[in-house]
Length: 108
Image 1: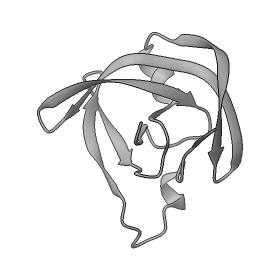
Image 2: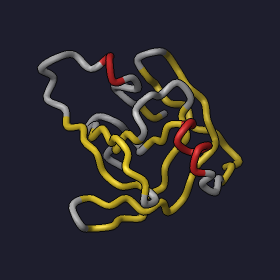
Image 3: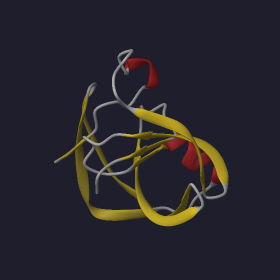
Image 4: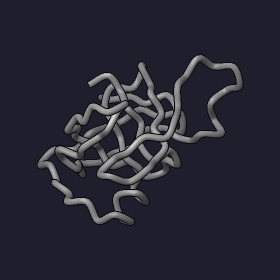
């Protein structure tokens, strides 16, 4: 089972030591939340649909524990280039519904 602590930007308590900022994903400027407690890296379904990134459906599904309850998904976008301060990393992103933050970068 995976986990994510914050799927909504307004749910992050004021003063909480989290880092969020604007970075480039697939050459698009987006908001990334760095969540050291998240088990995986997640992408907002709206961002995925807007930029029509190639999807890979896995045979099994992920069960993600979020503040709003359990979310099941088996959709992944593989090898998406994320640019962090001049360095580009190919990252696999799990698509989550109900997430308003573009990308949640976890510890996977």
